[in-house]
Length: 179
Image (cartoon, rainbow, N blue to C red):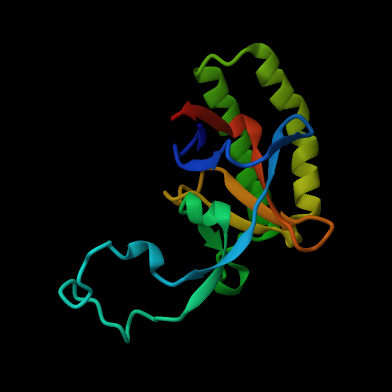
């Protein structure tokens, strides 16, 4: 299995268990799925005694559930929700992308990436940025577990069917790690 980590933050953000497609030579897209997740369900230790652990059935929100994207849940991403004022404005995101592009280029150079990889990134990134910014209002924005503001922001949109969510990530902003 291959886990993809963010080249800036080191956060795990993708795995080859998803059907990953390259778009415009610089972006990866992968279909996700949404499902209902019970609140705090991944914090319950098997065999633990909730009363001994300070757990309280009333405070646990039993029965409460939230909709999550599988990629968000699997990699413990943080959703920058518009209604909570966390999603950056389009101008702020554009500024982030400029900084991010420079950092990715620096990392690629530092790591000795082949010149054709660097050229592919330089050539394809401007058009991809334009495409993303044109569609920015439709995206949900996620950040990796570390919440590193300089790292990649993962974008979630829906396919033409209006039902299937998909994630967009920067191909050159990822490092492969075999597990």
